[in-house]
Structure formats: C-alpha cells, structure tokens
View 1 (cartoon, rainbow, N blue to C red):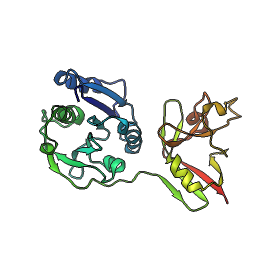
View 2 (cartoon, rainbow, N blue to C red):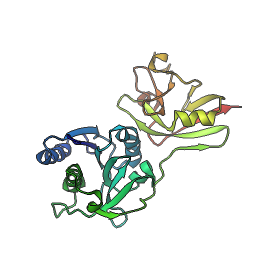
View 3 (cartoon, one colour):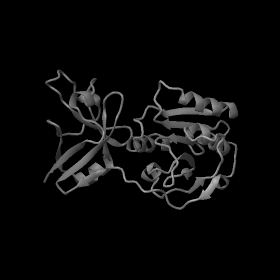
View 4 (spheres, helix red, strand yellow):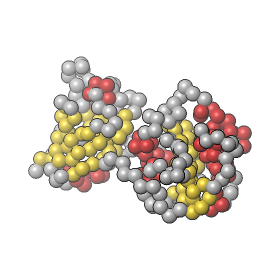
Length: 265
C-alpha cells in the first residue's frame, strides 16, 4: 500500500492530548500515512462498546489497513499485547477479550508481541508500543517476526440475545451521539428468528410493532407523546430511534439494558 492506512479506535476522549501524541509519532516515521479516526471517545474501559465499533467500522477498510485499538489496554499476566491478521487487515490491541469477541479464533495469524517499546514505563501502550508495531507492519516487517505465534485468544462473549421461542431478550450495545440505540441483533438474525411472524418490541413503557425503512416514518411531537421506531442501521444491526430527537434521553435506555421482542404465533 503506497499510503498506508492506520486507524485509531480508543477510549481517550477528545479533550486530551493522547490522539495528538499517537498521530505525531506515526507521522514522524511515516509522513505519507493516512491516519483515520474511527472513534476516540468510547466509554472508558468499555470492551462491549469497542467490539461493536470494531465490527461495524474497522472491517470495512481495504486489505493492508492497520488498526490500532486502545481500549482497556493493560498488559498483565493474563492478557498480553497482540497483533492479528484478519482478512488481509492488521489489528494491534490487547488480548483482553476484545479481539476474541470480534474474530473468535477465525483469524489468519496472531502473535503475542515481543517488540520492545521505547520506554521503561507502561502507561500508554498505543504510544509506546502499538505505534511502533504499526510502523513496522507498514514498512514491510515480516508479521511473524513481531512475536510468538498464538492459536487462541482470551475468550469473551459479548451479550447478544436470548431466544425462548416466543420471546427474544435483546441487549442495548451502543448509543450514538444522536441518541440512537443499537441492539445486539442483526436484521438477518431477526428475520430468521421471526420466521414471518408479527412482533411487538417492548422497552420501558413503549411498544413498536413494525420495522421502519428510515427516520422519516415517525416524528417526536412532545415529551408525553413519544413514538419510537425500529429500523436497520448501516451496521446491519437493529436500531431504535426517534425523528430529530434522542431516544437515549427521552426513553432512558442505556447500553447494557434489555429490550424484549415478542412474536405473535
């Protein structure tokens, strides 16, 4: 790749200097790099949220892209720093359950990093190590030379759904800056489980009985007249939303909450 693409996904937030440090280090060694922010304001230490973002955004990039993922990144005796090749892309992160939740063990190659960082302190893995590894990959360093090969990753299951035949318990995994609510169920999974049946989704005191093609279907008219819609986000996951209003604020649903979907037999 003539201009290597390096993406950043992190829980740093936007008010601090962390992104600037990382980008400065990358550009000082790869002036032609194309550094792309995926999401830098994830909830601190929230691996479930990070999994959703990586699944939804990182995997859409072309082969050869290098992804730095710095969420809850602390090397311990139980979790190491790793680099993973998956479908021609490279992911540099901590083996804290996040990579397994994204890839399972369905990756091409993975190594436990044995690259020495340039600091005796271990407070900022993305700057002290992940940048260095990303540059090495971009410059053509053989992947296997980055560390010791591993066959499995630390297991972590993120909430999906519970199916008892006539009812689904679905989790809220993410809420965007518009207040739209993303559920832990893809449209294809929903249709397979639905099997053509009518449904009604219940969250708090609100009920939805149809799948809307877009946001224009429903408008929020007043706080006491909230009409919620269910649609399919660009990620492929089901999404709860309000027209020109925040579903998160008005309904009071947050990541980790449960939504119930009943099927009418």
